[in-house]
Image 1 (cartoon, each protein chain N blue to C red):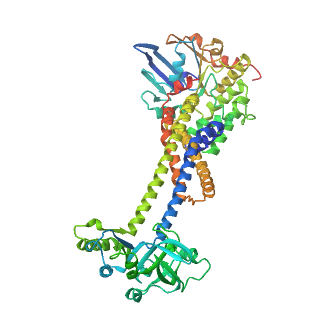
Image 2: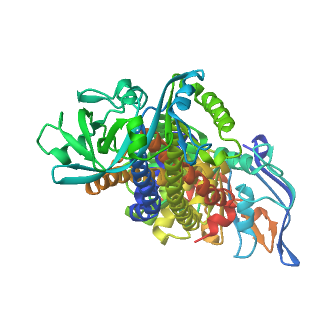
Length: 391
Length: 247
C-alpha cells in the first residue's frame, strides 16, 4: 500500500469523525498555540533587553571598578592611563563618579556627576551636540566647566539655551560648555541624565582620592579576554592581598550573561508549554485506542481482504500523525494571532520566527508518531479471526 | 470431465485443530481430509458447533491448523508468516461473509476496491476492475451508494463483487444467505450458481441443508469429523437444471 493511499484513507476516516477528531486535536492545538505565544513573547522581550544592553556601549569594552579606599587601594589617574600600553587597548577612560545636587536658578535636582578625561568621548562613545568637550587643559587647570546630558538640560533650563550659563554643583559654580547627544536608556543609567566635568575637578568636588572606574576599549573583540587577563595581572600587582578592591567587568560577558538569562527564560517557558503538548499527545493516544477498539471489525475485514500488519500499522499511524499535525498547524495559526494580540494589548515586542513554526509543527507530528505507535501496533497485531468475530 | 483431470485447488490431509481452554485442550477438527478441484461447487454442511466455522477459517487462511497439511493452489499454508498469509488471502481467496462485512463508511465501489488496494494496484486499473466486478453482480447503477443505502441482497452482492474483484481461484462463502430473507437468499444463491457455471470454484459453508442442496457436491461435518457420501454428489447437469428461471 502506498503512503498517499494511507493519507487518503486517514483523511477519509478523520472526515467521517469530525467532532471526535476536532476534540482530540484540541489538546495539541492548545499546546502548540501556547508554545508559539509564550516563546514569541520571551523572544520579543529578549530582543528588547538585547538592544538595551547594546545601547550601553560597544561590546568591546572592559570596565574596572575600584571599590577599595585609602592610599594602597586606589588608583591615580596617571596609573589608570598607563593601562593604555596593554596590547590591543585602543583607549582608556578613567572616571571619578558620584552624585551631586545640581542647581540652576531655583531648580535643583540630584544627578550623577562623572569626572572624565577627553578619552571618554571615544571610549564610551558619548558625543556632544553643542559647544565643546572636556579637554586636557581643563584637567590641568582644574577648570570648573561642565557638559550636561539632554535630560539635565531640559529639566533645568526647559526651553532656555544652557550653553554659557552657570550651574551650581554642591554649591560650586560651573560653566556649561557643551551639551551631550541623546543616547537613550541603558542598564547603567542614562547618559542623558549625567553631568560631566574634568576628572581633576571632580576629585575635589566628590572628595575622591584616585579614580573610581576605568573603561578600556579593546580594538579587537576576540582579544578582549586576553586584554582582561593582562589587566587583571596588573591590578593584582597593584592591589596586593586585596583582590576584592577592584572588579573587572567584561561588556561582552555582561551581554552574554543577559543573553543566557533570556535564553533560559525562553526555554523554560517552552518547556512548560511542551508539557501541554505531551498531554495533547496522550489525548490523541486515548482517542486512537478507542478508535482501534471501535474499528476492530473493520481491521478484521481489512485483514481478511489481504491487509498486512504493516498496512494496518501505517493506516492508524498516519491517522494519528494527521490528527496531531493538523492540530499543530491550527495551533501555529492561533498562537501567531494570539502573539500579535498580546503584543498590541501589552504593547510589548513579540516575534514569531519561522524556525519556531517549523519546530512546533515537527514536534506535533512527532508527538503523533510517538503516541500513535502504541494504538497502531495494537491494531496491527489483532488476529483476523478474533477481529472479524468482534462486534 | 472427470475430477482427476482437473487441478487440485484445496488439498487437506489429516488436519487437526486444537483449542486450548485453560488446562484442557479441545479438539475441534479430527483428522479431516478434503480435496477440492478446480471448478467445483462444494458445500460444507453441519450444525453449529460441528467445527465448520473453524474449517472455513483454516481454508480461508484466517487461522492455522494445529497439525496436518493444507495445500492451497499447490502451496503449503502451514508455517507461513502472518504477512505471507495476508498475501495468500489477498491473491487466492474471495470471502463472502454471512454479515456481508462491508465497511459502512465506504461506497460500494470503494469497498470492492479494497482487496485491490492491498494488492498494490494503481488507481485507474483498480477502478476499472471494481466496476467490472460490480457489473457482474448487476450493481453497476449502485456503485456510489453506501452500504446503508442498499438492501441486504444488494449488500451481499457488493460483498460478492468484492470477492470477485481480485479474481481469486476460490470463492469462500460463509452462510451467504444467513442474514437474508428467503427470496433474496435465493437470488444470491442463483448468482453463485451462475458464477460456478462460469468456472469459479466455490466453497460454501452452511448449516442449512436446503442451501447446501444448491451445490454440486456436499460434505457433511459433525463433531469435527468430515464425511462425504456419494449421495451428496449430484452431477453438474442436474445442478444447472435446478437454477430457477429468470434470475
